[in-house]
Amino acid sequence: MPLKTYWLEHAWLGAHVEPGVALEVSEDGRIATLTSGVHAPPRGAEVLRGLTVPGLANAHSHAFHRALRSLVQVGSGTFWTWREFMYQVAQNLTPDTYYALARAVYAEMALAGITNVGEFHYLHHAPGGAPYADPNAMGEALIEAAAAAGIRITLLDTAYLSAGFGREPNEHQRRFSDGTADAWAERVGALRPREHALIGAAVHSVRAVPADQLATVARWADEQRAPLHVHLSEQTAENEACQAAHGCTPTELLAENGVLGPRTTGVHNTHLTDLDIGLLGGTRTGTCMCPTTERDLADGIGPARRLQQAGSPLSLGSDSHAVIDLLEEARAMELNERLSSRTRGHWTANALLTAATADGHAALGLPDAGRLETGALADFTTIALDSVRTAGPLPRLGAETAVFAASASDVRHTVVGGRHLVRDGAHTLVPDVPAALAESIAAVRG
Ligand SMILES: [Zn+2]
Image (cartoon, rainbow, N blue to C red; front, side, top):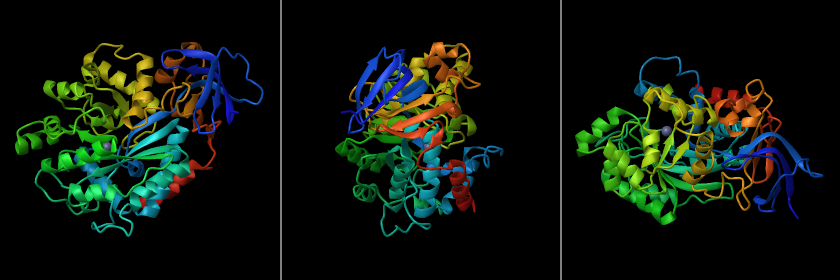
């Protein structure tokens, strides 16, 4: 007996769009059956009009950066001046204020069709660096916030131990540091996965974890068979400092210390050498592009196409949340490549959607999400094909409509584990998401 039946007016099945699909959800929140050629909704089925695609995976998030939106976009300066603003907000975060903010941000994600977030979490301790009574209070707040917003989370608990090569954490960064990678591993070992939550690992960057401690983090992730993420070569200054300290690139340093591999994802991967691209592709290390953040922070355009050709699977993240719109991230990856190469058509719409769905979930340790097929998690989202952006001949083009024309505002429905979380554009657990954002952001901007 299925728990629930949905009827999808149009469904993207990975390589093409099928009209009229009935989808039954099993008791355990997975897709029990998927039947094509069902041209009218079966009796009792919930009708999803528009284009249904698998739930979108936001593979790189720092939830609290949402509080900086608009405040930082107007300024001049660099990544490094932006970072000073970011530290100001971080100062005001406690487990309670972070829970409220993250719940609102994750609810915004659900409204944008995101069903799983990779939270790259390094704000571990109280201001000054003293642990909370529960040393994982901040991580637990994020896990609870995802539950309250109804989405899945992979908590990428981040090792952040130094301010730079051979430099102690500064006043702001003391909250991030466990002192040593062994102490990091001990704290993270106390976190438990839940039905909606996986525990993964992250190396903040080669700046923030001394080279002789990288292997400790990699070993923990290997033992747990957990995803391992790392900010990689987002800025040329990081490359220069790494060359000065170690005589090699950040990618080479990670390779030497056993950090690369198929469960690892490099985030940004912007300023790479040919050797770096070969190392990342050859080890099947993933690449998470965050195009809206990378353009906001004036990072540059990473070689996504060459990385993928070398063997690196691509995923997408909204990172600093200048906008939360995975469809925009997907098309921006293609459009960035056009600007830098002055040629068009590097990815098909199917390939862009695969990065936003199946490959994104795989990067977060959920290979059984991100696809509309029997046995997969019943996580999906429906994009309107009759909005001002998508109306006209576009519906017949199916997947391309979603990637090249639609925005997060066109998301009508989001279903997670078979549960109808966003219905007709309204969140069913967080009734007023804008108010939740406004209140929680006011509380931390100070
Ligand atoms: Zn980041």
